[in-house]
Image (cartoon, rainbow, N blue to C red; front, top):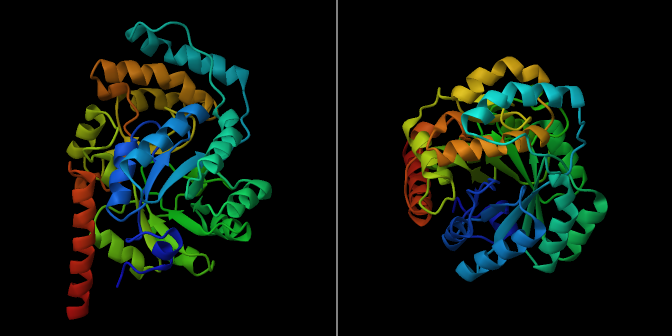
Length: 358
């Protein structure tokens, strides 16, 4: 059967379908558990989550499922605090702060400080799977995870990144195409120089590594799943498709914006976070694009826009929200996660049967 792959065997799940670990709120325990209970791998995006909150989220997820799930963490990156850029971007964003009556710019929080404490929580809580974005943990951390029989998943946006992940012994590689929503996992080059589409990326990665590959980026239904397998992938990872599910923690405004959008409505921007990310175009992106050369590094800019994004959402105004979404938005639907999982499995069955009849 199509679902009996290296990915499903390594992860010990029924279907090689992974729910992308979207940090910042969408991947609540209800969504993660619903995917895992349906035979896939639910993933909690812990990038911005404090270690104490992460432990609570793990406990909450375990109350809803006894199946396997993953926690995703951000590998620390070198952050250059360019004070000149910081002063200029604060000045550029003052009109938006004034619009929402916000106080002077808050200091940015260094989420890199979370990483080692998050790993400690993951090991103590015996989370069965951990995935990484924005890099590769050092060998000591990978060895600790292996010693606890915790499966590891790395993220690559180029063949060279995939090769490096394989060298470090990561057990699965998510090859993430440029169609993907939100921040992609580039770590060797600037993300602007790693914009390889899923159709081109997957077969090239598969041909250059022996580690099983999970396809990601623009996959929304059974057709995308079958296409990924045809390209050599052993599994798929879907983000935007699950973002509009009933259990998703994305705001209703965000969900509605995705449902109403089409494939030409997303664009790449650094303006919300300082790191290139794909989302639905809006006024903030359009107006701030003129300042793209002075945007501070991630996560500094991400912290600088946080209260603007929050105030925009509270005002039910999507013009200043980060509406992360991939290019497959026209295929989005609002459904319970279990129902969507059932549809994905049925569609994949149907597509494979059609191909056999051709």
